[in-house]
Image (cartoon, rainbow over all chains, first blue to last red; front, side, top):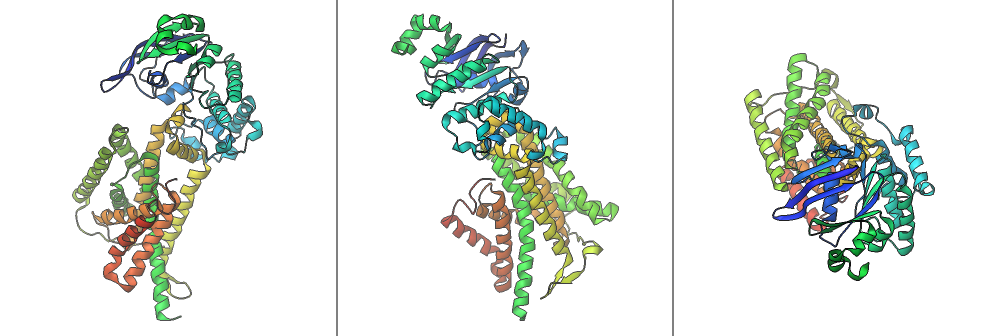
Length: 250
Length: 290
């Protein structure tokens, strides 16, 4: 089991954004969490990544209880995530964006890095890692371009590249297809399918056609609760899901 | 050169020295605000502690250079402690809490200083090697003040290099804009906060130690300079590193030149300038980025 939650709950005051969710994801799987706005998908994602601690319940990663583990420690254990709103560093070059990830400092506990007053160009090892990732995500040609000038699709790709730099085992992609043109969406689907051969992937997504096309397993959230789970076909056939959420979209 | 010009240049130099001290304090305030959204009311108190730590070390070893070397790490440790113990539990809560806490820390520090070192003004002499004056072509000028300016410029360059050219600085700048993404890259943002707060406090402490020889050391010495440094931070642009330095010098020069022509107005002039500046350019000289 790659990741698992037991009765995971996040309450903001009286509102339960995530309510007693029991979720499991097998290693090597490409799965999705769907649901309309306000269903609690992104909050559930934040719970998995450690950005929000659960009010109740437990979170397990590869059998280990990580409920109390802060985000940066989960990342070092192999949990990578991207964000709904692209979170690249616009004022840095494509290369430097990857370099931030490649160096993955743990300031100030790696004092040796501070002491050596490390200039970016001198850090050959990180540079090599960054160049390999740029090749892998197809952005090597745009190495020195300011990240802000990339198309939205390539910004999404860059963000995934930053996360891949950290050698994740589990990749959490938050609405990675949002705002992409039809052409970009197609490219991104192919890209996610390609990297799913190497990583376990969980996607939060609005675009139903993309989710149904791409995922091996789909989980549906409604008002903070998990109301259906299964293969895309099983979810399509679920009466409640059809009635309440997907309707003619399926 | 006429007497007036000699006086003017001398006063401009004095303004520059004081401005660089303000810049050193404002740099720390600005970096802390830029990253952590904390208005550090206790910053003036760290300036005071810096002066007293230097004074105490001088009492033991009678060596100014050792005192100057001891102050930054000592203050950095104090900064680490305050951030870790008092400020960290308040992150994500109403910003008024940290504002009040820092105000309390400031009052607490001043009282502790009164208890430990007493309320009397304590003289602090510059070292013999820096006690003379040099002729600058138009007037004599204190070697110690030239030394202070040189150290401040050196530190400003060093902090700029740290922020702009090192991976640590890149991480700090990244955390200013995209805190969640920095966490998602496996970086301990809390540790970055601790480090930045420690650096800011160390800069304030060093400013206190450097300023001690041309002002007497007393428990409330940090209160006035804190307000003047805040004026610099506001004029420079909240969170702007460049702005903190440039505005610190501007504030220093305004005070020095007003003293020359209308001494009674020297304190007020800075606030009038800030008010006019806020009305015409509220974002400050350099906006809000580090």
